[in-house]
Length: 408
Ligand code: AMP
Ligand code: MG
Image 1 (cartoon, rainbow, N blue to C red):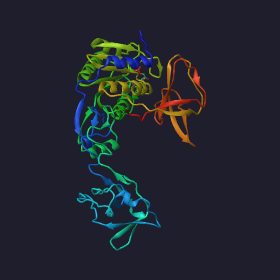
Image 2: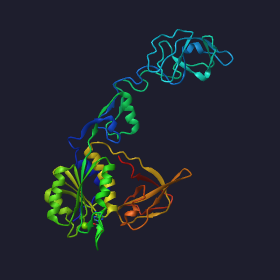
Image 3: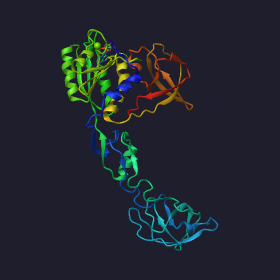
Image 4: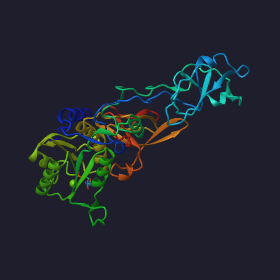
């Protein structure tokens, strides 16, 4: 019998039944770290900037020397030595003086503001006219304004962006602890399956799930390990699943997850480990199995590629976060349905959509077509869920769309 769980119960089971893998962090170079998940909090250990800097090309001044000046009554200051890029200023600016300074140049001691060159006039007699007052701190970034020793900058669990890599570079943090890539075993079962390179014979179809799941694992930051197509032979499947569970952090077993005679996934998991549940009250994806062999999660996915995809995106993504010990980040896009969508089967219904933005309004076009068609998935941007107790949504209803490109 199927012990069917709701999607919410499945999320809870993932949290309570699976622990983060013990050796989950590795140290890598910051240049390799974009897209990886931080396994540590990053705090600055230096001041950035390390010295007071100008943010414009202009003249370093004592702010009070410029108070009250204007186009008609410039503040006339004595020129002093020029500040050079990449070098210490190395002098003290006395009151009544100004020093030419480039963007990023170090402010001399004593100076507390910079006036832009556009608001100055060179009198060619060793003096400069300042035509606009500069308040203290004007056009200046002070030492430590960006970060200072001990300042928390990035938190564990963050998927590092190119901007983050830039921040690491600025702080001189060239090694980071990240969550290691989890190894996801992928097995496709079914007598009817042939490799996509081959021409299917009568009654045969190409194996979609191996490559679909592998690409999805890669996108989610895991390393796919392909165990190939396995015919519906229980003994063979048993052997391969055992190998996979021994070699990988999780096993995705596609096909044979229903209750037919040939559907061996349940028996195979049970023979070597335990079944946590069989069946999720959702559409697509009902015949899904969660089990474990030792501490290795084994997920029996429906062979139907659309269902396998949804289950993996919704639940295996969570499982990866749990095993990796990082939080899942989901930022849905709110969109209005372009047409009504019916749902009355007492199961949570996940609907693919493609999004269109027009005149500042985001519209979600529900994907129509028979659910068995892989092309209903290709070309869509994400999905929304109609809860099981809801009979459908009218055109114009606002729904949160989870994007497939959300790879957290
Ligand atoms: P099953 O879950 O094994 O009962 O399969 C359900 C449906 O999905 C059947 O129509 C299978 O032919 C199809 N199917 C199973 N595995 C795959 C696969 N790897 N690629 C494409 N279709 C599959
Ligand atoms: Mg099958």
